[in-house]
Image (cartoon, rainbow, N blue to C red; front, side, top):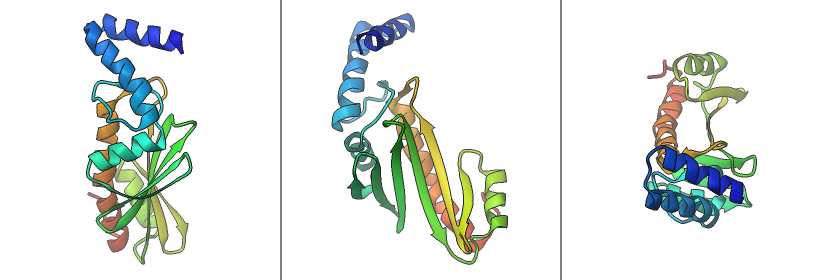
Length: 171
């Protein structure tokens, strides 16, 4: 871990970040990712834990329904259940939403995938489809980027449900 911290400080200082900012980022990386503390927008994160992810989701206005183990956080958004899953020891955040209805067809999933480049949809059973989005934290991303990912998920969920419910062309 000392090598990672030294490297992070060197990168932040080389980028012109004042020493105080470098120290704030180190605290955010070691504390927020592990304890669930609020993520500083400029903090560089390489992994998250369920408590940290749940705290961020609540901060962004999503209601936590449940957590399960070290990998799953369930939220409800506009009546739809969204699952946030931590993969690869918290280095990847996957968000998934499932929908069933007559519009959930292979043709609708293919149309979604052609139009919506930040997510992927697939049919899981006749009349049922899932949409997933991933954010890879390996190598480091800022707290602001993680927040942006959650906002993207929040925008994609109703569009996906609407698209699969209507079998329409995605926005």
